[in-house]
Length: 223
Image (cartoon, rainbow, N blue to C red):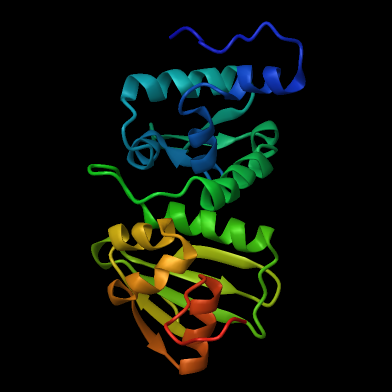
């Protein structure tokens, strides 16, 4: 597939977009920032991409020195991973995630694929970017039904998220679709969506969770 981005404009921003600005390219980088991925893994998380498009993007990113292949010894399986050049795009992806949460949120459209791990990754980037702090470390377990459970953790300095289970200060149960509607709502509207979010834990820890996500219950005072 021919490249469509050629600005003929001498500028580092324009040149960067010529290298990484093609459709799907930054999303491939986004997913590889989690670690090596198989072709089928990338197909899953890049909902809407075709094998032809993914093959083309991977080849272009390989030629640009952003992605490389790793063979699995004794198998025909190939995994794709980022080079140092590719990993240097992490701040770009993080900045886009934070900007998207603050300025481009909306509820999911019909038929859009929803992966909680992607939204939680963006949430942790936003919390870390804004240096959101709690009085003490916290572990929150988010249960998304058939989409599995994920841990959102604050260690006293940084936020992180990963699939799995753990003893939690707060357990939040919600469907992936309602979770996206919750995040996509304006902060003043989130309290109205609380019936879709079942929270378990001590009262002060639940209040901590709610403050973090900007939930203001009726009659509550501002922080």
